[in-house]
Image (cartoon, rainbow, N blue to C red; front, side, top):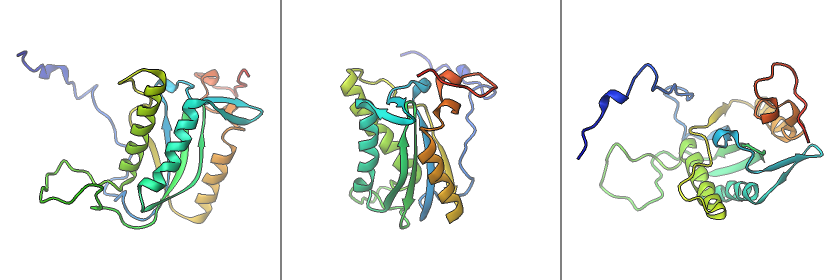
Amino acid sequence: MQPLHLDRYNPDTHHRRSVRLREYDYSQAGAYFVTICTMNKECLFGNIRDEGIVLNECGQVAADEWLRSAYIRGNIELDSFVVMPNHFHGIVIITCRGRGVLQYAPTDDKTPFRSPSQTIGAIVRGFKSRVTKRINTIRDTPGESVWQRNYYEHVIRNEKELNGIREYIMNNPVQWELDEENPACAGKKVLCVAQR
């Protein structure tokens, strides 16, 4: 048995700043905007053609699994979403308080490591996991990462903001030539026109 190398952890370089709101209960009813990027921003899901997304098989998996989320979790509704070549945007609405509503049989086990299954984090983790499993089956790449760690979320606070985010999602394929997630735009400070 090899000794643990605790010296490998360096708090100055091995830290991740949370993008979540402190003390916010992400299982409470409300609308949430999420963005999830592919590993290394690989254009895995399809191409933009004529200002619209043309999904390939992997992109269709992502779209199908997002829609499936509403069937798996009875306390959510899905709103606008788009699968882009290397990322995903979606609005999920939690319709009722879900904390403690676990998707497995209740037990007396109260370990602190069990996370509630109805938070935004759990919804995103489940989605990412299902997409990864199916894509790795398609590509015969067991254990490969499809997604970057973490995700971006935003708590939608009012109807005006909801409508603005819906518009952003709808227009995302049209704006691909200017999108910072577009590899053709990487590192450029000026407006980018992607190669088609």
